[in-house]
Length: 327
Image (tube, rainbow, N blue to C red):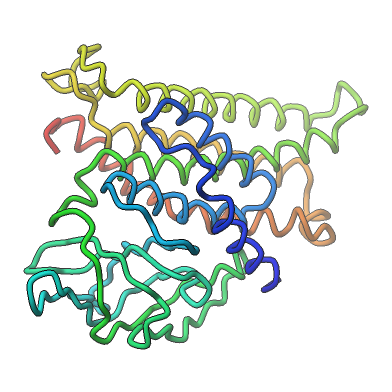
């Protein structure tokens, strides 16, 4: 399995530049490609997605990235703090610990967020620097088991600032990247639906499991349409003609609230994926989970990948944005 994830990292480094950048007319193709990877292998999608997100971030910042595989490490924890200090003009150094650094021992470089003068700022770092140490992760996950996510300790590691303070989360691409993750979820769920369709092909029209398949199809159709709508919105972002009020995520100047759009899309796709997991489980029972390696792995991978959606907390955020449009 470790060989598989190494091949996935190599694939990302070799083919990541083939993915269209979001917001430049082919966002639907970008997300369709991520969904296709998710349908094929969620481990592959989980490796490729942050790499192509990093390339898009650097593109937004007007920076040509060095070759190699990239990670994006933006998670924070109260017991793991990473700080950035400018020792001399232009000489930034990172010191501290960054949690949830997926595949830090395999990728070459990463975009990481750090505290700079009490503000959150993004930096590019070389993970091969002797001051960057991958720490034991204690990773026991049954899903995405080879995409090990653990802490990295930085000891005076040179870093390149990407954008100014707050730029990373303020730019539209932050929301667009979150939708890219949802496209991977969709692909994983669609693969499970395909498994169920195959199990029911040529069977009785009275098979009650057709109800499970019908429910799945309706949910995934909704998710597919939502992703397509979001892609059109992203590619048409320069059209600032108002199409609705605050409840539609459109401000008085006609600009979309990208954070609200991303949270809505992620909620729709996550709900469809979780419903797919439930319906497929009801329809197929325990046998494929116990005896079909591909199916069992796909289920476990999707279950943990979906936890990047924060469920009720994200729905609460949607509600907050609706009653406070400036949020």
